[in-house]
Image 1 (cartoon, rainbow, N blue to C red):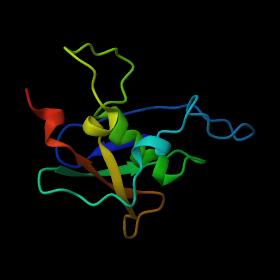
Image 2 (image 1 turned 90 degrees about the vertical axis):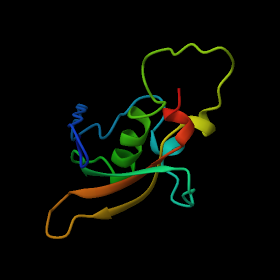
Image 3 (image 1 turned 45 degrees about the horizontal axis):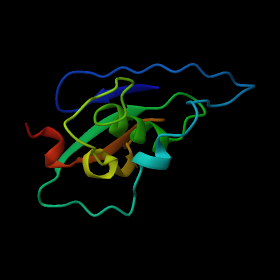
Length: 120
């Protein structure tokens, strides 16, 4: 799917899908960890809105969760710190998705980032 950031540069993530196989994101769907529709944003959260265009067969929730994951803690890089860190404390959360009016298969994914993710 293609991911377009609304408030700055552009993220582009490509995944290959085959009609006969369906969507295969890997071992675990992003939406199981990063899509939290019941999340209530905090006054300290940094809120962002992304325009996403999922590939055929990719649910909008998965596309929104992929944005939250890949722009926060869901990287392929091992990050070493002085101590143990909590995924729930630092992860971005896609908490709402809505279709773009008049545009087929385009959505606005709302993501909340904890302020601690960006602190030095």
